Length: 301
Image 1: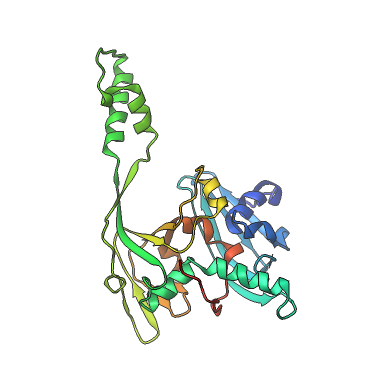
Image 2: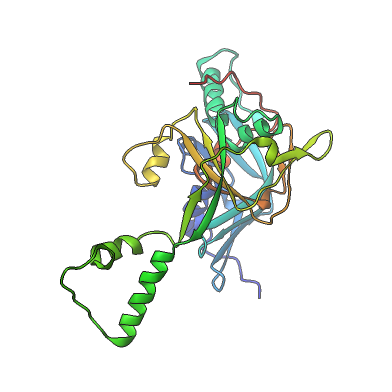
């Protein structure tokens, strides 16, 4: 059954869509969708999925980076059950006018360099050239395993609820205390197990042909970029008081198929790559750069 278009349209879903499509970064406040009324929404109640689409290219003005973008939105989907989103489309970039060497032009160039530094494009280009270490990236294997202690506490609660028992003990041990149980129950269902050893790039990347590199790994990759601190917007979303002096992300091959990477940092298929951590926050339209972008010199710490 095909759900009808949402009649309330932008009034109902506009802010939600904008925050996930343009992002919540410093750049996003200076980025707008000119023809936002062209966007249609469809919500599937049974699967809790929001679909967005447009019959005309979206016109996006990014005053932070100095680009006008025509974006043919092919697919946008947000799953409220998993909190996962995916969007795909075809951008056409046009530089906004500015005098060569002007303050506006210099600001755009600085903002573009900042958007590039530590980005997925930066990572993919570095991986393609086998220059991850030189460019400030570290990768490690990571597994997500069930939180067995949380499962045990849940089972105890279930059994107590079924029997109607309330047990009080003298000399309570730490693992039986209510404080301990509350702490455990607030933990995620899956726990991260990080391998401390660095992963050599050539152990996960290989040449497919003269122009294409392949990336393949199991489980997750833990990716750190060492030359940039977390922005305040990301720290606030994480509800933390202090920023880390490095960027930490995780990636997973959703379909467990080889990811094809070109020299310019583009990759295929995009729906095969799941981004978590910092990249889930930063990789959005307000930080998107054209694939012919050439970065200025990045100062390493």
